Every structure is written in structure tokens, then in C-alpha cells.
Length: 327
Image (cartoon, rainbow, N blue to C red; front, side):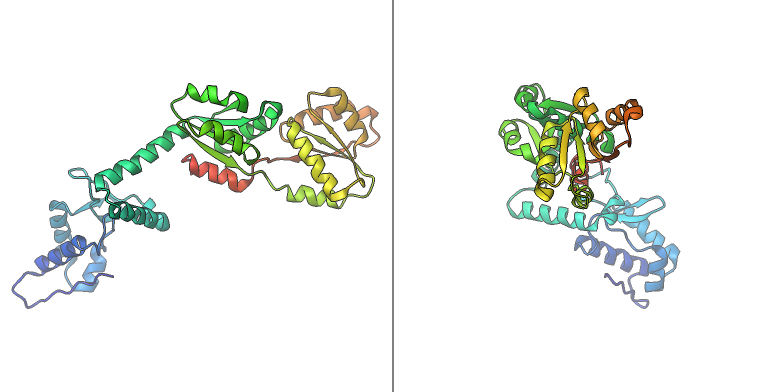
């Protein structure tokens, strides 16, 4: 912490002493660019000088181009590299001190490796601009044979992040990317290998997402009585296959499992009439409820429907949000 000492009986005026001490603190980076200087009240208590004298010193520092006042916030050290119209440090620097430290450390590494400040600036801005361009167009991809899971991912991303998403079959991804200057490709980790082979030569980012762990749903299945009939409904054939395998791995032949896609009305009707519980994805839920309502007069007891609200894990969704610059 910088301490200022004023010699009251010296030949140099108190204001000049304070001016020179603050200027030295700035030049020696004890007060780095963007640092907020102490308030006039704080300095008055520390130095014994009148607040008007301190205000005068701050105006001199501002005239010298060393600091800049931000209305309602305080006096800040002028950021380097913005002559004539310096930008004050945003409050985000104070709200994200660890991130600010990472930025400073990265910049130091670049300078140590031989980059000039201008070159480092171009590297940072180039990467940021590229990510912004990529984030302006988001593509969700999945294999054609299981495009349903792509529909689920696209729907969840659009709803959670409030952004438009384009769904492209993995088999058509290369051709689609050839028509774009930049994009961000999002896919399930199940398909990341194939997607990377296609996207790597292109000017795109690719972000894999992890699926929801279904911990509550799995625990529910573990506790079902033997011989319970359960139905699984999804627009994704892959989701159905994986879910059936998982249920069997926990309960073997103790449970009777039936599966259907919402567009297969015949199988869905049979499932509704025989299952005690039905698990479904969010996109299939309206169709399941409609079939149950239509068959209600033929049902002794309507099945209990458990809607799995998520396919993408919450941590992956948060990571995707940050990667796209949305939070």
C-alpha cells in the first residue's frame, strides 16, 4: 500500500510534494493503469492536507495526462496505449480481479517472448474478434441417423441462451461450413471426434457439451418394484437406445422397458396403455400428454409421466454461455 509523507517545513510546497509522490507511484507501477486513486477524504486523513489542496493536485495530474476522472466513481490512472482519449478501467476489473490477473500475466508472457505491446494487442483483439464472429453463428450438429438429439440440443440452447441456432446434420457440416466465414459448432461429446475432423480445417470453433447426468431419474428407476412396466419416449433414437441400456444395466430383466418415438403413433398408443411410468424428453412431452388425454377413457390408470427437462448438463451450458460471450 502506497504511503504519502508531506514535509510541512520544507521549501517545496505541500501540493508539489504530493503531486510528485503520486506521479512516482504511477511511473513505478505501484499505481498501475486502471488503478483507482484514494479519495480526497482518505488522502486528507493520511497527509493532513486540506481536501481542496488534494483536489488541486488531482486536477494537475489530470492535466498532465496521468489520470482521468470518472463521474461518480473516482480518479483512475490513465490506461496505457490510449493516448488522447484514454479509456478508464471498467468496474469489471474490480469485479473480476482473478481474470484481470490472468490477463496481466498473459500480457507479461507475450512481452517476455518478444512481442511488442502493439503486437500483443493485435493478438488479443484478433482472438476476441474471431470468437465474436464465430459466436454470431451457432451450429448444432449430430449424425443424420440421430438428428433428433441435435433437435434437443438446439432447442435447449435457444431457450437457455436466447440465441438463434442452426441445426446441420454431421454429414452436411463440411458443405455448410464452406459457405460461412466463421461459426461455432456445438455437438455432444459422443460425436466430437467426427465433428473435429470436419471442422478443424475450417475457420470455426467447436465446443463439445456433456449430457445431463440424470441422477434423479436413475435413482427413481433403482427403486421401482420388480415387473414394473416403464416407457421411454424421445425424438432421439440414440437417446432411447442409451436410456434402455442404462435401465437394463441397473435392473436387468426386473423391469419391462418399452420405447417409442413421438411420431410413431401406433407404438406410442401401445406404450401409454401398458406402461405405469413414462420417461420422455421435453420435445416429446406434449405428444405424450395428448395421447394420454385421447386414450383416457380406455385407461384403468393413466401412467405417470416424468419429463426429463435437460439433455445438456448445466455446467456445459454455462461454459457454452461464457464461450459465446453471453455471460
